[in-house]
Amino acid sequence: MKGTTKCGGAFSLLPLLFLLGCLFLNATPALAQMPQTETQPYNWKPVDEARGLLVNHVQQLNQQMPGYTPGTPLHDNALRRVAYYKAIVYEIDRGETLAKSLENALPAAATLGYTKEASFTSKVVLRALHEEARVMLVN
Image 1 (spheres, rainbow, N blue to C red):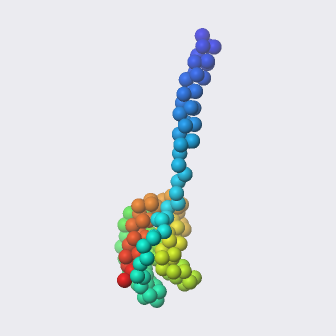
Image 2: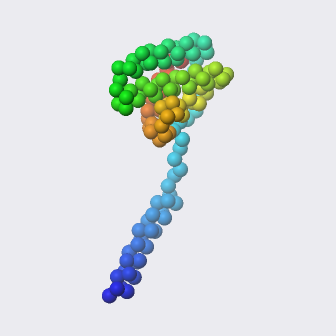
């Protein structure tokens, strides 16, 4: 009886292993958490004006932050915006265009200022942040 059980157990694993193999072969690679480059040209605000808007938003958010409980979604979202806007300002100061700065700064938003793993923030949230910043910085 023992030989039958072992043999039957091995044969029952073959279909499962076959299915797992098929799943791995058909799996598509995960894409980075960044929106695709925009094809539509936008009428961006002047760099100095855009930088000033971002700095003002960071200051406003920093004033609001003490009222938020750390670890709550409200706190994390404010922290994510602060990290994203600061990173955009950093990219602008490096000489990047506004469009490129918005894209380059997304990892800072995804990781709450590089303090948590990149998988913490969903693509939907990153797209929303990107869109929010784009709307703010376009005439």
